[in-house]
Figure 1 (cartoon, one colour):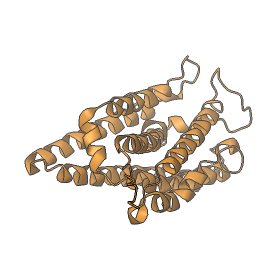
Figure 2 (spheres, rainbow, N blue to C red):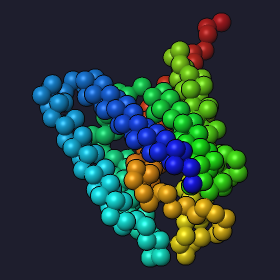
Figure 3 (cartoon, helix red, strand yellow):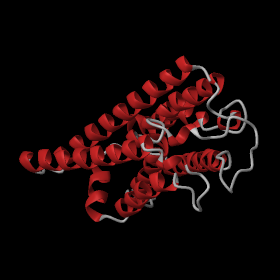
Length: 251
């Protein structure tokens, strides 16, 4: 394993987590302002979110440092513990009326534009493959085509919603396509771990995901990508399309 590539990968993931959370907080601050919530309450809510996020990352860090996630022999593998809580939170938010109000005031292009980060994620995985700690099937060199979402995200956000456009059907299709590609790499990742589910027997096995800070990939980055797709879809279904009224001209 190339130590320089490994260290670079660690730094990349840490910086990516900071960037994504900062973007999330910017969007939250914008939404709370647009909803005309009192400034002290806005600040208090952002503090609660930051504390909760910090506690979650600290817990993941401590468990990864202790070697807890390195046990892939259990059923289900312990790595699932990093994935399930964020997914549960996403589901709860999807059915939350207050959160629906937040989504109503966030520009519909934002959850799409942010998916551009997946280009960086795919470059990290490819670098990890070259560095000897990421299996090839988890890169765009083989079975991971998630980079398509990242590359098309800027264009999709502009074409669907730029210049007062509203292309609802196309945005729904794009989001579903992105979810399918995301589930694909998650499945490939699981089938590459040294667990009872292992299908890909090439080396290295997917064990780096259990280490700090790579545990943030299943614990935050992947759920973040999923959340942006689902939140975008909820925005699309929250918005009632304007129906054009046609009048018969008088002869």
